[in-house]
Structures are given as structure tokens and as C-alpha cells.
Length: 371
Ligand SMILES: [Zn+2]
Image (cartoon, rainbow, N blue to C red):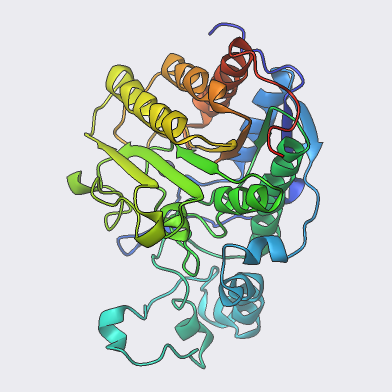
């Protein structure tokens, strides 16, 4: 790989991001090892440090920043459910060592009845969680909160005039909606950053999601809004891939948000040329609409070596994606997926190097771009 050029790039993180250990996932009824492991964050930190990034600590933010995109009941649930599980003896007496939901209040179940908060902790476990893969244990909340703080701190840096900043968020976030979590995500770090940038004065924010999977949570959060564009390229849910229920091309936003949502589903096996053509389409759409700042949902699980998707993107492809996005404006890059530990760090460094190069070649200003 060529020189990545991220010397001095702010990379925000927190040690607390290591404290979330889901201890696997329950997938199709069977407890499996899982791939969203603490080692991911260690690998990324090592690669960024080696590449000369300026590693900086996440600053604790007010809960208001979380509540700008999430229901307070979801945030409260995530903050307290493990303690309730522990107090209920689920681990001690029944060997259930993580919070795993088993009943879900779907619209079909409720049939229009009000959504109640079940008395039993194991009943409540499915109230806000929409799958069985996204487990909560000791330390999960500290990591979830720290990941959001990393995204917010990176947004602060960009709002203060930094051209590009990166948030090493773990756990990832783009599958979490306003009030429901899943897909190994708990709080939506990228959406929280986008909302913070709006509050900091950016009138138009564009979220570009290059993770292999559709960011159904981010889409849902901003679906009715014209001020935060969401564009994603991802493996086609219509070909059988997570999140299954969202990510289709005809989802274009609703009401005032109509036209501010763009999905580009890609066939399994898609490699650099077609993947980059999709990135280029999103970049051109954002350029046409105009934006004050870009939030990149930086998932690198579209890489050929990744175990979680059938896309076949190379490190050079990721770097090129960064070069295409970099000229659009200031960038807050938020870590999403990426699960192949040997290649994960290089892929993220390559993408960030592309973003920095693209910004520099565009002669980008380094001062705060919005009034
Ligand atoms: Zn993903």
C-alpha cells in the first residue's frame, strides 16, 4: 500500500470501548463466537498509531447529545438493563451470562395495543432490541457511551475547523434507530455526530455510509428530514442480506425528507469497479445538493477478506473511495463494521488516507466552513 498520509489526523477513542464484551451472539438460535470483538478496537488503535494519527481521548458529553436522535427510554434501557439482569439472577441462577431477548413486541403482536413495559426483566429485554445477536453484558454501557462520546468529540473538532477527524467507535452504531437497537449496534454514533453538527451550525449534513450493510438505523432517524441526507451503498437486502427489511432502492425519504435518502443495493460479489461507481454516484448527488459537512459511516466489511459480507472490495478501492469523498467538505469519519482482524487496520488507514488526500487535492480550507 502507498503512504497513507494520515500523520497528525485526530483519531478519537476511549479505553472504555474495550469494556463491551458481548461474548458472542445468538444467531439462528445457536450461541456462536461472534465477530464484533474488543480486539477490533485494539487492532485499529495500533494501525492508526503506526500510521502517525494523533490519538486523542473522547470527551464526555451531555446526555442531551444522545437524546437528539434517540428516545430517552432506549438510552435508559441500555444504561440499566445489565444491572437488572444481574440483580434478577439470570446469570447466577440460570447461566444466562448476557442479556438476550426472547419475545419481541412486533406491530402484529400488539395489534394496536399500547406498548407496555413488561414486569419481568427477560420480557423487557426484547422491548428495544430487534434481534438475538446484540447482547448486553457488564461494561457494555460504558463502551456504548464512550463510542458515542468519541463520535461527538470528533464532530466537535470538525465544527472547530479541523478538516477531517476520525472516531474509533466500538461498538458500531448504524443499525440502531430512534428507539430500537440490533445488528451489534446500540447507540447510533454517526447519527449522533450528524445531529451534533446541525446544532453546531451546519445547515446541511450528508451521511455517506460505505459499510457493507445498509445503515437502517441512520436512514430511519433522518427519513423525514431534508437537512440530513443519508446515502448508502451496501449488499442488496433483496439478495438475502441483513438488515433484510430495509435498504431497498425505492426508499427515498418521506414527507419533507423525500429525496434526501438514497440506497444503492449491490449484488453479492461486487468488486472495486462497480462499488466505486456507486460511491461516485453518492458523491455526485451530495455535491449536487450541497452540504456543509460529511459524516462517513466508515465500515470496511465490504472488503474481500471480511467474513460478514460477500462484497469484494480491495484496500485500493477503499482508498479510492476516500479520495472521492474527501473533496466534498469537512469529514467526520465514524467507525462502523469491519471484522477481519488481520486486514481491518490497513483498510481503515487506507480509507482515511484517501479522504485526507482528496481534501488536500481539492485545496480545502481548514477553517470552519459554515457561518
Ligand atoms: Zn456492516
